[in-house]
Length: 246
Length: 210
Image (tube, rainbow over all chains, first blue to last red; front, side, top):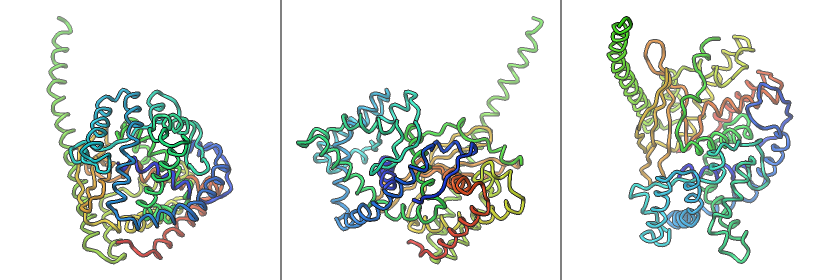
């Protein structure tokens, strides 16, 4: 649940930066951000949009009683769970697919069309998968880090994933116009996540020496963690003994 | 037959040594979990009992000094630049980083205090130990996954190296943002030190949450 909320938060953060002059040196090549100068401009625009639109809307949304907001979140999570189910299956994660399917059945019935989440209390916590993660599992590289207007962090692999997931998402097929439902669902998820993380995002911005770079790091690290389903590969950790030898 | 006796002795030696090695590893992993449990308890006690910012910061300063190897963390968060700056600049950087971490976490954790850290399984390789945990809240909020990266020092004791919250290693995040500041200032360490000083001052001016 927490992880799944984090990506919309970061997307919301994208509607949140600082511009500066960049010089590229090989020492910093691992930020995977060859278009940093352009990305920072988009980030600045999104930051202005966040301050003028998303953040005020999110603050207003907090006046809606907590149980109502929780039910809206549960309902949306349940409705879009076929996205996770499709990607669990495509990744061959049969046990996780079983959990997602069980959650869908339980929450749609006992949980009154998804308004409540009894499945979590039954020991079936929510997880999310998306097609960007599926591509990563099959070895597709991230591609250069990109900032997309309105959407936020969107390296090519994740943007391709978003398009495919829109096709997996039942909400896409609910409105007269196919994009209407998807856009509404995205907006609701974004506002809800922003509302739940107002203080956290403010604190990250306040305490970071470079907010743009912090968001980039948060996004890329979180995606890696999601792709690995939260597991740590100890072989990937830097060698700390080297740090003592200088 | 010529090689049979040495081979037998070798396999016996390995057979006897392997369980001992496995026991050591299991004992170390158990100690790592205790280290995390104790450290989390200390942090929660600070948040529960110290209500002023100064008192919380003093508590975290003591915790950090006792539990973390700040020189190693400072070296890591500065990346390759640590080798390029003078000892004086590095000492200043380490001191400022220490203060930044204390202020950031005294503020970021300000809203917490009524929760429980449930320590889960651990993994280890060489001197690195990752201990998994969940922070559970008593107000119905969803639990948060937190991983603790410990390092076994030469004397066998553990020190904290990094903390991963919801999939993000905090020291890695600091390293990435510091590298960006250095890149955008042509590697000028004084620019980074200035940025960190500003953030510390910002922290001094913030009202603690909670």
